[in-house]
Length: 279
Image (tube, rainbow, N blue to C red):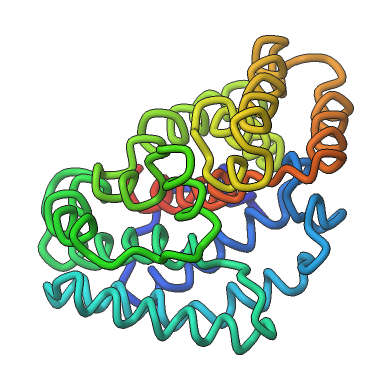
Protein backbone atom coordinates (compact mmCIF):
# COMPACT_ATOMS: atom_id res chain seq x y z
CA UNK A 1 0.00 0.00 0.00
CA UNK A 2 1.26 3.48 -0.86
CA UNK A 3 2.02 5.53 2.23
CA UNK A 4 -0.41 8.49 2.43
CA UNK A 5 2.52 10.90 2.40
CA UNK A 6 3.32 9.67 -1.11
CA UNK A 7 -0.27 9.18 -2.38
CA UNK A 8 -1.93 11.08 -5.24
CA UNK A 9 -4.58 13.78 -4.86
CA UNK A 10 -8.16 12.78 -4.08
CA UNK A 11 -11.31 14.42 -5.38
CA UNK A 12 -13.81 13.83 -2.64
CA UNK A 13 -17.36 14.22 -1.34
CA UNK A 14 -18.15 15.22 2.25
CA UNK A 15 -18.14 11.64 3.54
CA UNK A 16 -14.72 11.02 2.04
CA UNK A 17 -13.48 14.31 3.48
CA UNK A 18 -14.36 13.08 6.98
CA UNK A 19 -12.70 9.72 6.37
CA UNK A 20 -9.57 11.42 5.02
CA UNK A 21 -9.33 13.70 8.06
CA UNK A 22 -9.44 10.68 10.37
CA UNK A 23 -6.92 8.81 8.21
CA UNK A 24 -4.50 11.73 8.47
CA UNK A 25 -4.86 11.86 12.27
CA UNK A 26 -4.07 8.16 12.42
CA UNK A 27 -1.09 8.58 10.11
CA UNK A 28 0.35 11.20 12.44
CA UNK A 29 0.23 8.66 15.28
CA UNK A 30 1.91 6.02 13.10
CA UNK A 31 4.88 8.30 12.44
CA UNK A 32 8.04 7.72 14.51
CA UNK A 33 10.12 9.27 15.91
CA UNK A 34 8.27 12.53 16.54
CA UNK A 35 9.95 14.32 19.47
CA UNK A 36 7.93 13.93 22.65
CA UNK A 37 4.80 12.75 20.85
CA UNK A 38 2.78 9.55 21.08
CA UNK A 39 3.40 6.98 18.36
CA UNK A 40 2.88 3.27 17.73
CA UNK A 41 6.32 2.74 19.31
CA UNK A 42 5.91 4.55 22.64
CA UNK A 43 3.87 7.19 24.45
CA UNK A 44 6.47 9.96 24.29
CA UNK A 45 6.04 12.57 27.01
CA UNK A 46 2.49 11.41 27.77
CA UNK A 47 1.40 9.13 30.59
CA UNK A 48 -2.34 9.36 29.97
CA UNK A 49 -2.61 8.27 26.33
CA UNK A 50 -1.20 5.84 23.81
CA UNK A 51 -1.54 5.05 20.10
CA UNK A 52 -4.63 2.87 20.56
CA UNK A 53 -6.45 5.62 22.45
CA UNK A 54 -5.56 8.20 19.80
CA UNK A 55 -6.72 5.84 17.09
CA UNK A 56 -10.08 5.30 18.76
CA UNK A 57 -10.45 9.03 19.29
CA UNK A 58 -9.78 9.70 15.61
CA UNK A 59 -12.43 7.16 14.62
CA UNK A 60 -15.01 8.73 16.94
CA UNK A 61 -14.38 12.09 15.28
CA UNK A 62 -14.90 10.91 11.68
CA UNK A 63 -18.68 11.57 11.51
CA UNK A 64 -18.15 15.03 12.98
CA UNK A 65 -15.51 15.85 10.36
CA UNK A 66 -18.04 14.71 7.75
CA UNK A 67 -20.69 16.93 9.37
CA UNK A 68 -18.29 19.88 9.30
CA UNK A 69 -17.57 19.27 5.62
CA UNK A 70 -21.32 19.16 4.95
CA UNK A 71 -21.82 22.37 6.94
CA UNK A 72 -19.15 24.07 4.88
CA UNK A 73 -20.76 22.78 1.70
CA UNK A 74 -24.08 24.23 2.86
CA UNK A 75 -22.49 27.64 3.46
CA UNK A 76 -23.00 27.74 7.23
CA UNK A 77 -21.31 30.33 9.42
CA UNK A 78 -18.96 29.80 12.33
CA UNK A 79 -21.83 29.46 14.79
CA UNK A 80 -22.88 26.17 13.20
CA UNK A 81 -19.30 24.94 12.81
CA UNK A 82 -18.63 25.70 16.45
CA UNK A 83 -21.73 23.77 17.55
CA UNK A 84 -20.56 20.69 15.65
CA UNK A 85 -17.11 21.12 17.17
CA UNK A 86 -18.59 21.16 20.69
CA UNK A 87 -20.46 17.93 19.94
CA UNK A 88 -17.24 16.40 18.59
CA UNK A 89 -15.31 17.36 21.72
CA UNK A 90 -18.01 15.86 23.95
CA UNK A 91 -17.89 12.60 21.95
CA UNK A 92 -14.09 12.57 22.16
CA UNK A 93 -14.08 13.03 25.93
CA UNK A 94 -16.74 10.33 26.36
CA UNK A 95 -14.66 7.90 24.30
CA UNK A 96 -11.40 8.68 26.11
CA UNK A 97 -12.68 8.90 29.71
CA UNK A 98 -12.05 12.63 29.77
CA UNK A 99 -8.60 12.71 28.15
CA UNK A 100 -7.98 15.52 25.66
CA UNK A 101 -6.63 13.58 22.71
CA UNK A 102 -7.68 15.78 19.78
CA UNK A 103 -9.15 19.10 20.92
CA UNK A 104 -6.75 21.07 18.75
CA UNK A 105 -7.38 18.84 15.77
CA UNK A 106 -11.15 19.20 16.14
CA UNK A 107 -10.66 22.93 15.71
CA UNK A 108 -8.00 23.07 13.01
CA UNK A 109 -8.81 19.95 11.01
CA UNK A 110 -12.51 20.68 11.43
CA UNK A 111 -12.16 24.09 9.80
CA UNK A 112 -10.20 22.56 6.94
CA UNK A 113 -12.95 19.95 6.46
CA UNK A 114 -15.54 22.73 6.30
CA UNK A 115 -13.41 24.59 3.77
CA UNK A 116 -12.95 21.41 1.74
CA UNK A 117 -16.72 20.89 1.65
CA UNK A 118 -17.25 24.47 0.51
CA UNK A 119 -14.52 24.17 -2.12
CA UNK A 120 -15.85 20.91 -3.53
CA UNK A 121 -19.41 22.21 -3.74
CA UNK A 122 -18.77 25.63 -5.22
CA UNK A 123 -15.61 24.89 -7.19
CA UNK A 124 -13.87 28.01 -5.92
CA UNK A 125 -10.21 28.62 -6.57
CA UNK A 126 -7.74 29.26 -3.78
CA UNK A 127 -6.46 27.20 -0.91
CA UNK A 128 -8.41 25.76 2.00
CA UNK A 129 -6.58 28.22 4.22
CA UNK A 130 -7.75 31.14 2.08
CA UNK A 131 -11.33 29.87 2.35
CA UNK A 132 -11.11 29.58 6.14
CA UNK A 133 -9.70 33.09 6.47
CA UNK A 134 -12.16 34.69 4.08
CA UNK A 135 -15.34 32.94 5.25
CA UNK A 136 -14.79 32.47 8.97
CA UNK A 137 -11.66 34.42 9.97
CA UNK A 138 -13.44 37.34 11.63
CA UNK A 139 -15.88 35.03 13.43
CA UNK A 140 -13.01 32.88 14.68
CA UNK A 141 -11.35 35.89 16.29
CA UNK A 142 -14.63 37.24 17.67
CA UNK A 143 -15.74 33.89 19.09
CA UNK A 144 -15.38 32.51 22.61
CA UNK A 145 -11.96 31.53 23.92
CA UNK A 146 -11.32 28.16 25.58
CA UNK A 147 -10.13 29.73 28.81
CA UNK A 148 -8.75 26.59 30.43
CA UNK A 149 -7.11 24.80 27.50
CA UNK A 150 -3.36 24.42 27.79
CA UNK A 151 -2.79 26.25 24.52
CA UNK A 152 -5.02 29.17 25.47
CA UNK A 153 -3.37 29.48 28.89
CA UNK A 154 0.10 29.52 27.33
CA UNK A 155 -0.98 31.99 24.65
CA UNK A 156 -2.22 34.43 27.30
CA UNK A 157 0.75 33.96 29.62
CA UNK A 158 3.45 34.32 26.97
CA UNK A 159 1.69 36.44 24.34
CA UNK A 160 1.80 33.69 21.73
CA UNK A 161 -0.57 33.60 18.79
CA UNK A 162 -2.09 30.17 19.26
CA UNK A 163 -4.50 28.15 17.16
CA UNK A 164 -7.15 30.87 16.77
CA UNK A 165 -4.70 33.34 15.25
CA UNK A 166 -3.25 30.63 13.03
CA UNK A 167 -6.67 29.60 11.71
CA UNK A 168 -8.01 33.12 11.23
CA UNK A 169 -4.93 33.97 9.16
CA UNK A 170 -5.46 30.94 6.89
CA UNK A 171 -2.95 28.60 8.55
CA UNK A 172 0.32 30.33 7.56
CA UNK A 173 2.44 27.74 9.39
CA UNK A 174 0.83 24.96 7.38
CA UNK A 175 1.29 26.69 4.03
CA UNK A 176 4.58 28.39 4.82
CA UNK A 177 6.31 25.45 6.49
CA UNK A 178 4.26 22.23 6.47
CA UNK A 179 3.51 21.87 2.78
CA UNK A 180 6.98 23.01 1.57
CA UNK A 181 8.52 20.55 4.05
CA UNK A 182 6.33 17.76 2.68
CA UNK A 183 7.57 18.48 -0.84
CA UNK A 184 11.19 18.68 0.33
CA UNK A 185 10.86 15.47 2.33
CA UNK A 186 9.61 13.60 -0.72
CA UNK A 187 12.77 14.68 -2.51
CA UNK A 188 14.99 13.59 0.37
CA UNK A 189 13.27 10.20 0.83
CA UNK A 190 11.06 9.48 -2.21
CA UNK A 191 10.30 5.91 -1.11
CA UNK A 192 9.90 6.38 2.66
CA UNK A 193 6.64 8.10 3.57
CA UNK A 194 7.22 7.79 7.32
CA UNK A 195 10.59 9.51 7.04
CA UNK A 196 8.93 12.27 5.01
CA UNK A 197 6.52 12.97 7.86
CA UNK A 198 9.36 12.98 10.41
CA UNK A 199 10.97 15.70 8.31
CA UNK A 200 7.74 17.70 8.23
CA UNK A 201 7.40 17.37 12.00
CA UNK A 202 10.94 18.64 12.56
CA UNK A 203 10.39 21.62 10.26
CA UNK A 204 7.21 22.55 12.10
CA UNK A 205 8.89 22.25 15.51
CA UNK A 206 11.76 24.40 14.28
CA UNK A 207 9.52 27.24 13.11
CA UNK A 208 6.20 27.20 14.99
CA UNK A 209 5.69 28.84 18.38
CA UNK A 210 3.84 25.77 19.67
CA UNK A 211 1.75 26.74 22.71
CA UNK A 212 1.85 23.15 23.98
CA UNK A 213 5.63 23.44 24.24
CA UNK A 214 5.19 26.79 26.00
CA UNK A 215 2.72 25.25 28.43
CA UNK A 216 5.03 22.38 29.35
CA UNK A 217 8.41 24.09 29.21
CA UNK A 218 7.92 27.84 29.05
CA UNK A 219 10.00 29.96 26.67
CA UNK A 220 13.11 27.94 27.59
CA UNK A 221 11.41 24.69 26.60
CA UNK A 222 10.22 26.15 23.32
CA UNK A 223 13.71 27.43 22.53
CA UNK A 224 15.25 24.06 23.42
CA UNK A 225 12.81 22.26 21.14
CA UNK A 226 13.31 24.64 18.24
CA UNK A 227 17.10 24.49 18.48
CA UNK A 228 17.10 20.69 18.55
CA UNK A 229 14.91 20.54 15.45
CA UNK A 230 16.91 23.24 13.67
CA UNK A 231 20.15 21.37 14.33
CA UNK A 232 18.64 18.15 12.94
CA UNK A 233 17.59 20.01 9.79
CA UNK A 234 20.97 21.72 9.43
CA UNK A 235 22.68 18.31 9.54
CA UNK A 236 20.65 17.14 6.56
CA UNK A 237 17.42 15.98 8.19
CA UNK A 238 16.27 12.59 6.84
CA UNK A 239 18.89 12.84 4.12
CA UNK A 240 21.78 12.50 6.59
CA UNK A 241 23.44 9.20 7.41
CA UNK A 242 22.09 7.93 10.70
CA UNK A 243 19.08 10.28 10.69
CA UNK A 244 16.89 7.78 12.52
CA UNK A 245 19.25 7.55 15.50
CA UNK A 246 19.57 11.33 15.55
CA UNK A 247 15.79 11.74 15.56
CA UNK A 248 15.45 9.15 18.33
CA UNK A 249 17.98 11.06 20.43
CA UNK A 250 15.92 14.23 20.05
CA UNK A 251 12.78 12.31 20.96
CA UNK A 252 14.46 11.02 24.13
CA UNK A 253 15.62 14.53 25.02
CA UNK A 254 12.05 15.85 24.70
CA UNK A 255 10.71 13.01 26.84
CA UNK A 256 13.31 13.68 29.53
CA UNK A 257 12.00 17.25 29.75
CA UNK A 258 8.32 16.25 29.30
CA UNK A 259 8.08 18.41 26.18
CA UNK A 260 5.33 17.62 23.68
CA UNK A 261 4.71 19.70 20.53
CA UNK A 262 1.02 18.86 20.27
CA UNK A 263 0.27 21.82 18.05
CA UNK A 264 2.87 20.63 15.56
CA UNK A 265 1.33 17.15 15.66
CA UNK A 266 -2.02 18.66 14.64
CA UNK A 267 -0.34 20.69 11.90
CA UNK A 268 1.42 17.55 10.63
CA UNK A 269 -1.91 15.75 10.17
CA UNK A 270 -3.47 18.87 8.69
CA UNK A 271 -0.58 19.27 6.25
CA UNK A 272 -1.12 15.74 4.98
CA UNK A 273 -4.87 16.40 4.68
CA UNK A 274 -4.45 19.63 2.71
CA UNK A 275 -1.88 18.07 0.42
CA UNK A 276 -4.25 15.21 -0.43
CA UNK A 277 -7.09 17.64 -1.18
CA UNK A 278 -5.22 20.41 -2.98
CA UNK A 279 -2.27 18.98 -4.88
